Image 1 (cartoon, rainbow, N blue to C red):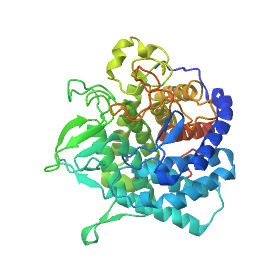
Image 2: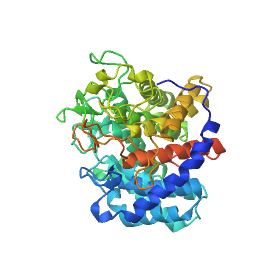
Image 3: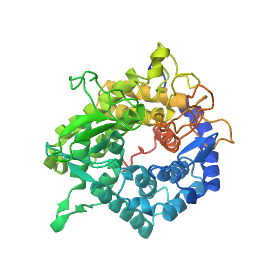
Length: 459
């Protein structure tokens, strides 16, 4: 990636002004045309959203997108779309014991609505607020109950693959546990044991940082600063770590870039949340310095790897080890090419990663760390790219917003329009949502509005 150190938030003012009408038209059309009986919208095929049975992890992005659109524009049509969709369709996700996706579904809906009320953006209503907060308490506890201890005495929230499996993705579902903790909730276990949701969140973050993120310390032949394994596999008999793996990447020893992006977005958010806690709240978990150092190391490493292994304009290809990249020498040194005939880009990874870069940059800059400017510039460079052609959808007939995203390259789920078999030209629900979320984050930074934080108003 070639970071444009001259880019500023002001440079995004015009692209953001043009973006919100496009986003609004897109989510309004989707909500009006989508039949929830068909499941959750997942990705587009020839410009139309379709479902893909695996797990129902994207419905919260649909309604959350509408809520964020209201946040950005004040247009109450979108508030009604998001609020009605949350009330009518999201309850099963609150009590879903079979997934690792509670942060995606429930924080994007109940969490955003609660945040807006706390910010004074929607009228205060005690019963409505209690409804959102009860959903978040239950979601955090249900997610935390999906737990497996490790041999070292820590533990992790296991993925839908089973108790042996720790996904990089889940780092962003820790938001559900942390919101529930913020609300004074705990997971109640056998014999009325009160289990700290903050404790489980920090143990999961530590386990992920230790095993899913690499630091160039020789763990294996391909160990490199910031490489991320999509999945870590543990022996369920004794909790020992066994091997890296992947479900959607090319190999266990390369980096699936959306897994990388989840790490990039998740750890800076955790750093932001820890700033809201008193020192005594972190003392049982090693203290503020130890916790912050662990989170910051993973955040820095993953963001550095993204910068080093992404095309010049900030949009990565779907996996850093994708075999077709050998046919594209110098791909890191020139702008991404979604129309190439070898490997797809994944713009959803760019949208997620841009947010992580911006959050890390802001957090470091607030502490006088010069690296903060570098990460912020990288985030702005990436966001500027995905807010423009060929990534931002221009065709009003296309239901997606962020083009050239992919879901599951190994399984061949993504639509490829040409004989070369390379997916292009389509959108995915998490890509659209995270582009809107990153745009809103930047919009607030530009306007000097309160920082966009999942846990509510922040300085």
